[in-house]
Length: 380
Ligand SMILES: *Cc1c(COP(=O)(O)O)cnc(C)c1O
Image (cartoon, rainbow, N blue to C red; front, side, top):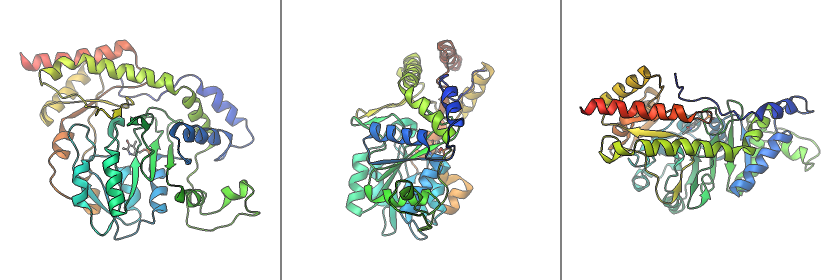
């Protein structure tokens, strides 16, 4: 069976993890954590990044920083993972869902303004499949209505928008290093990117259980104490070491992923030309990080048939999000504002194909062959 995903593993991880295990410091913010953060700050060109145990935690940290409270509204797409919404629901906010664009599956920036009310506090755009939302349009709205923008960039590490890295336009952004993402910190992990310097000081405190321990370690205060609310948002040095080895291999990992993505795109082009399937659109101002390869079929029925056909061929392909507004929790914590023209219908059509660093060219060809075979049977 060709799996849908396996965690990226280059072979360099062992040596880095062993080194961390034998080091003097195993807890958070050890030498590897600081090296990772510095690497990200240079690559992104941003003032501060903080490793977190997950992208979910990075978003929680952001929602505490924004002082989200009951009565606030937060705008996001319904076509996303639960972790986009949960951090804001935990603080009592109401979630306001807005329809997506069918071409990128990202929030439709043209519909956001009509969802803004006096209670709106933040917009959370999700860069689906590593393809950026229209951030210029979104930041313009944020300026006009004095709102915060937190980018859910879980899938968008190493993607670009107008030639700058994704995750650098909003006030903050969150990346994921879960094993299903392009690079991992050993299974679970995340990063909070702080682009607005006003948040740096308090972010360090909240991340360190509400204490000023970070300042203490830098010698800025002579003892540390409890100064604010907080939680424990530091990953261990072992996770940081794993991640650092992957950062040093990022070009190798990305080249491989893009190669597979391009093979799929080329191999399935004939079906797209005959309008049998729809392939992903990458807007001109965006560069894709090959996080995901999806195609869209005609409807839910055909998708079920394709998935089971692929399974019989030894290929594990999967669908994706059930829109949040149609879930039990989504109904109680949120409201869909405007028409659901695309969220439900487009999510019903979507199929994700296997794509991972360790995938062989033969397996990629096998998947393409199986998809082509399915449709040739459908037509004759
Ligand atoms: C993976 C993912 C998350 C959650 O990431 P974790 O690191 O597992 O917490 C959040 N949002 C989106 C869009 C994701 O794809």
